[in-house]
Amino acid sequence: MSRSKKTRSERRAAPAWAKPAAHEAPTPRTAAWGWLAITAAALLVRIILLVAFSTRWLYPGDHDDFVRWGTQAADQGVLSLYDHAPARQNWQLWNGQKWVISQRAFDRVCNYPPLSGYLLWGSGLAFTAVRPDRLINTRSSHASFSSWSILCDFITAAGCAALVMLYRARWAGYLTYALALFLPPFWWDSVIWAQMDTVLLAPAVWMLYFMLRRRWLLAGVLWGLAFSLKPQAILFIPLWGYALCATRPFWQPLLGGLAAGATLLVTALPFMLHSGWAWFDLSYYKNLFSTYTNFTTMKAFNIWYLDLLIWDSLDAKATWLGLTKSLWGKIFLLLGLLGGFVFALWRWRSDRRGLILWTTVSVLLFVMLPTEVHERYIVLVLPFLGVLAALAWRAAPALLALIVVTMLQMTWPLWLDTKPGTWTEIKSIVTQRYNQARAENPAQVQVTLEEALAANRSAYLRGRSQTAPFEWLMTVLALSSTVSVVALFIRMRPETAGPRPPPAC
Image (tube, helix red, strand yellow):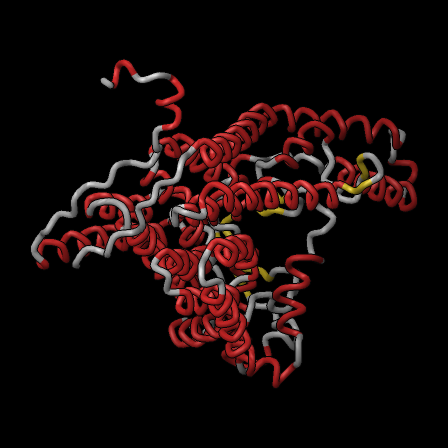
């Protein structure tokens, strides 16, 4: 039957995977120069960004935490990280005209897992050596503490390229590697915002690669390393559950899971001997189940940002039909993961590429459905969605849309002047100041409390009106992109082809 005469049902049932092309056979020297050229260009871009922009455009609070934890480890030993908060240090902030040196009036005990503690220790030693005054938010502090994230940018990109080249030709790997290194969300996160999300993604992407290669023990070790770097490695539990149910013999992924737990415990053992389970309480329990439980969303354009735009409330303890919004978020997530898990087992267990699809969908559901999601967490979706887009072009529009959404989420300090859901806090502050002024000098207070609140309410609504339409647009774009990825997950058909041997370097 000719292509023009195929029925609509036949076209719909056709595989959505891009057809694999034959591997090229370039000389080793040509292949090496290609990878090196991309690497050098991407590294140069990061150096320029770090030198020119990082000190003025970052979100300074987290950088202050990292530097203070690192210097604490350097001065008192790495095992002191979970004992107490570090001493305050001077930092410099740009006020639009000049640098102002002060100290952040906030203290936090280290809440990153043990392996990140060792990385912070190394950065603290390097920072102390190159900057004896330890002034925070300088090029030296950024170079010392962002170096791990920058390194992991390249490891993550290489993992994405390796995943793609399991099924596609070398040119697709080159393109994937380059895009992963030059897409703005990754260098903004690691260089400008000085965050550590690719430190988690580096082992996670390679974990998926070795799962596809059926190297379960090595994949488990990488999962354990991810767990010992950031608590968000918990997002890959649905992936390992799927692997356990879809793989025969089942004990192979089970052994990988045990290796992950053993790896985490080995990295944490010195801290356990020093301070018991404090590392687990601060890094995992409080991070995941305690610290931000009162907030529906932390600037993440998901279903709870939609709720925020409608009701102008961040209160996760508010109730719907007798249940808190926090509980509703958990119910939505559980139902989404359960439905996707059953569907993935039914549809994809014969095709290992189902691991890529399920990773993408499950991590995306973690970002879009529960409460307490930070704006940066969407970065964790992009490498897996990018690999999926390289293998199935129908995912490309969702990838492009979520890249835009990610950048707008992560640049909110530059454009969001009046934050939604803050009227209750503003009202409390205005009332407190009004009462204080009345108590100190009642003759100078010329308006009633109701008039003061009304004036501030009007100013709040004017401020919200400036960005609310834009926030609506980004939220709708994020949710519609999520729906399109889920729809692709449902409509795609598996094939029996497994991964090919990796091409020679």
